[in-house]
Image 1: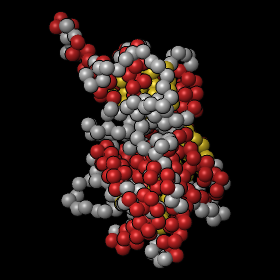
Image 2 (image 1 turned 60 degrees about the horizontal axis):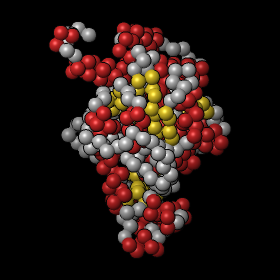
Image 3 (image 1 turned 90 degrees about the vertical axis):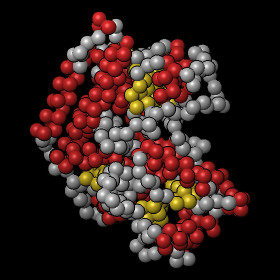
Image 4 (image 1 turned 135 degrees about the vertical axis):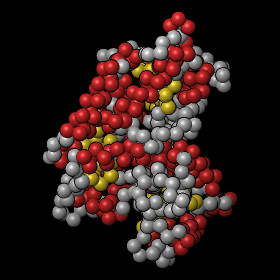
Length: 458
């Protein structure tokens, strides 16, 4: 009952966030950078910031997160971090020999106004960056945006630094997967492979943050998009970006820089969003959908039909990242469920507009807030109870306090496993999500059933 003092009466707040539904920008930038093969993320700020970013990613992915820091002291905090970053670049290439150092800033280095491109240029002039090696950067002040913003900024920097157009089109598609799990990226590659489409997926954290246990440690795992692949994105036939907030900026930057046309779709979570993704692949690549994918879709529809009675008119509250919530909301509506309270910590009016558009017929009075917090969500739930809560691990406090079933979904998930191993995207991912919803409802039904109504077969 840790949140038992949360009042049900909602008062508008302008200067106070309680239990934010987000984390800070550098975490997203660090996660995106890990999706480049041979890349070492570098946090330009204090050691404490880097430790927090690494520990959050480590606790979610259950893998060691390698990253370095400029290790600001009091002097660097006052006079600037140029000397620290130049020395760090020299040490990193000398000791760890990555292909790329991906620098992201912190609140401190942003506030004192460090000019990172100028510092990197000086390091290059001083011979600290070996030939064939790269240092890229992105700006990620944590007092604006969220971890999703940081992910989008670093992905856009990959385009700005590497994408090139040779004038000769390659028979390949770019796919920017958005902030999803390594398992989701692996599932996207599986589906495009089944359709016979050559793709460049960036960033790609599969085989980086879900590596098998072999008894050997590799500082730079085999996964991740390579530099030649990133360079070739400027020659691709088209780009499909999944998620407006996390992937849209990079896709639009690539279109502007190399004239590669882009489509920005929702994350392929659920039946209809996956249908649109598969159809976009089919049309853009000029291929047919294989029977194996059609069969996967049929099994999903069959499962929805069989279990529909458990979903019908169930009221749901959900919180998390905007791209995931948009797709999840549409999925829940397709199951005849009612998403009534929706909060993301990432700012952006487009989020609220899109949610209201999806729910205009089913839940016209939906409570939705961009740049909201978990405290507000809890207040809404107290005023108008729900049957299910969906969100990251922090939602367990609300679920416990209100005694409602809880499905973990999104980032971060600190107290369960499987999210980085089993996909949520595609038809297969949708079946897994349905399984989680069903188990939450059926476990509750078993718990609350009277003895004479306790059923073996449900």
